[in-house]
Length: 446
Image (cartoon, rainbow, N blue to C red; front, side):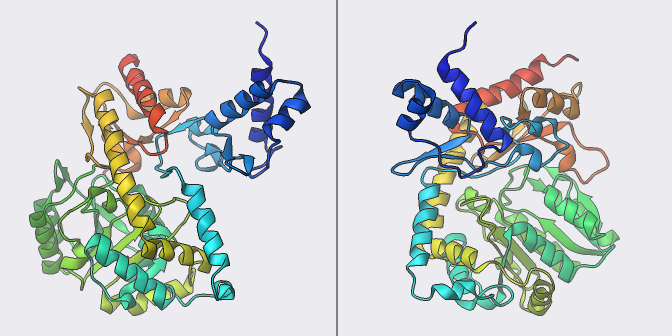
């Protein structure tokens, strides 16, 4: 069957983009230029660009033209994941927040910085942990948006939450220290613990949070140096601890003299919640968060709040490693915080997360799905006769990348389950993609 000129031209340009012949940022010809160059109608050229845009390969900007999209191939994230070998893979394993106007927000901020009075200051190196006025902006943001009141001297700016966790572990823990973690926990902390030689001791997970009786018993049997916890919108199980649970967790930490490491990467999604642990136990809590899950994953702007007694060690660890963030990044992030852009976009994402969870609940009705109604991910249990690795491979063959439970498990045996991120797929495509997941599971041969 003869293929149309639109299909042929679309395939040619797509191949050039994927091969790198047309690198990210390349300005493509105008619709009229493309039509004249390839001898097709103007309407056909418009269809070509529309198809390339739907494939995620180009982006059109009003008044500027069409450009090759800067979209790293999934293999650059994880070459061992079969689904990521395809540039067209649907990624349900990572959450990359995207929203209309993201490019314009960045463009307008760059213009604002360019017009600022002391632009040359952005070429200077910052003090370890950030400049005082920018840490004061973060303190104001935490007070307004998170209900956390803290002095700027206890705030340090980091390259995302992961670096905050790394700095906390490097400066406050030692190899072979015992750290209590949930039986299912954030993979980044698990990997960090392995790299730094920490001994992670799992705490059983209940339906509404960690088993605090088991945690108390664990701390009684062993010298637990720290407790790593996500009290507000746990990743991957989505729980939000009640005020009583938080009080009991703090009580256990004080009784056994444990450091609390509070990871709040997704906390903004939960809305109004009980006070953060850093508010309840400021003397022993390291609070870590960032803008990666709310504003932009590539911004790499995070912050940590530390006890007064830890300020010196944290600052020394920062000086010995990354010293400070790029000044341009901190200037943009803190201006967005101060001007209300972060708060506005977090509100948008909270509404969007609920929409996406509604779609997921509809698709997975009747299946064992665990999720907070405002989270950007879900936990999907598989029946006992299905193995997560075989299901993940089957999905990879259909071009869908997912996370397996083994990445989150701190116990010897992981449950057969999948964690699905919901924010990286356009909302119009989400239902169809999730239906593919359900169909793959239901049709899988036993």
